[in-house]
Image (tube, rainbow, N blue to C red):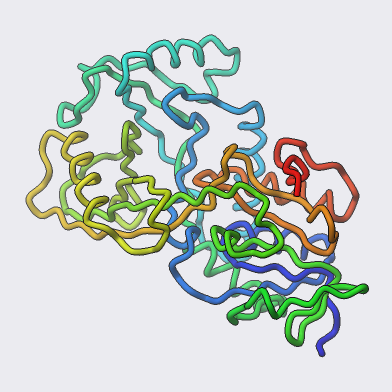
Length: 353
């Protein structure tokens, strides 16, 4: 058996990777276990960073902290790899419901609204190829995270730290002992599950209300420029640094797999034709799917099993992980190492066993 680790981490998605980064930089010994499959939610996620989510544009009070932590962490990783991960792109937010005029007025009344909202636009001030009957506004501090490149680089970094093992893991292989956790030939003080929607099969956390959310999106390729901004309405379109565009996304809670469906293709095609008055003749479409680890209250699952403290959880970040995981990872590490309390709204202690 190998020398014991402080922590085993199950899953090398965004949650597991960033948590491992923070733990190792705090002097902890870590082994990340991942099956290496490319269809996890993190590996197909758009990585959209939007501080004003949803049709009501509700901004959580921690939003600026999340943004600051995310920018700082991704910049630190960039110093190691030389690759650029966060791409800042202003967002054109289109109103698609009459009631949204009231929601945006409520945001404008906040004293720091100028940090997030640039200008209000009448429909006549928006590109005439875009359907925008209700107008919209320009949003700041938006962009996207290049998650696949980031995860590839973090995997290579973990390998240099002797902290990565690509292998399939069965929950039945995990042995809970008085002095720690054993998984095959690995031993650690505790085990932290970051397995995304795979949590639904985790025998120790069945009491948590996970609500996996399958999302499908298009990758659009054309020589014609569609937009220089992110456009967000009933659907969103994102120009990526490789010259392509991503368009999405759907939500499905029953058929939880990574298979693209004709139903979602029809829905996305209709959304594309609703957003743009004209589409270029050379437009080609590729369709992808992934499952987001969403939760019933839209808050992450972070903390320790109510019976066995060797079992930990860092999961459930839904579609907003690119923005929120860096802040939550730092605070979870402070909880693990310095006994700082978790915020009650994310601590899994909010759910009884």
